[in-house]
Image (cartoon, rainbow, N blue to C red; front, side, top):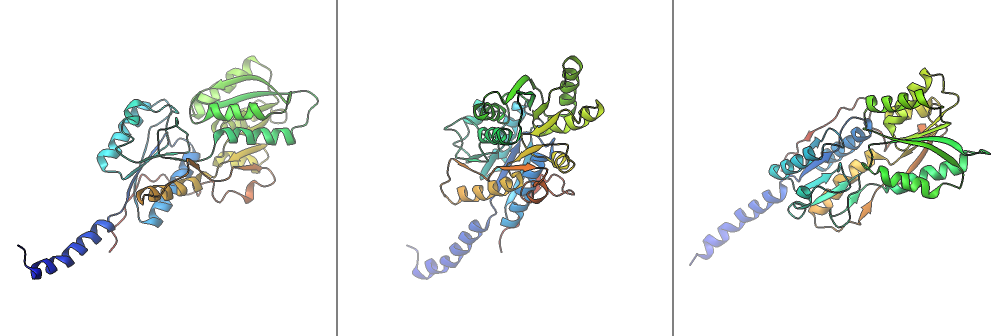
Length: 324
């Protein structure tokens, strides 16, 4: 039988050991579809600055594009091998790969920005991309006056990826009848080269549309291609989400309107949600910031929680020191 004196002597040691365990920094692993545009770069800055503020160790990996599901599966496993307490998943696909889905019970996982299939992750940090489409429709209904439907080219990005299908449905469901005449929908990867080829090929064979509605990369490309073709005065541009180049287009009156889902704020919210999960807090199924409608008139005043700082470069690791 252990003596009372020896047992009492162990108590300070146990208390110190417990404190050391509690002081161990939370390890969060974040997976992005890519870092090809400043949208995800802005999410990245939000995560990095909040992880630093909260004393969290953060590891970031990006798949290199929405087609690279196998890469993301491998990165998810690397997060687990690293010992992540929580994984923040910017999924390349709405339908989760079975290899990831089978591991969701092993590591608490939150979806970030991109929605995934129901009954999979714990919660989603982001906005409804259906509502992003609805927000575009609301602006078009209120501001585009025409006696005849406006001929419109849609360039949403990669088909069925990143919420595109939900955004398009939200747009179509809430447009007033005969407001737009959609002449074509061009799908392609979120790279400047792919989007430029899509647009130049279309303009070579078809009359220029009166309006282009596209993802941010498509909108960026359209600004330059329309100028080169002498069409800047006849074709207007609306962007479904915001990047630095789209923001510059707004200020210079090259872009009519753009959604902002405040992606830098989403990055901060995702880190906060990871802390909440680690503390056994319950989260609503979807939580995110308000969707903003940025125009030529208000764009300069409403981007503090949207875009990364001009000098910011991608951060792939934030290392936190144990509390002392």
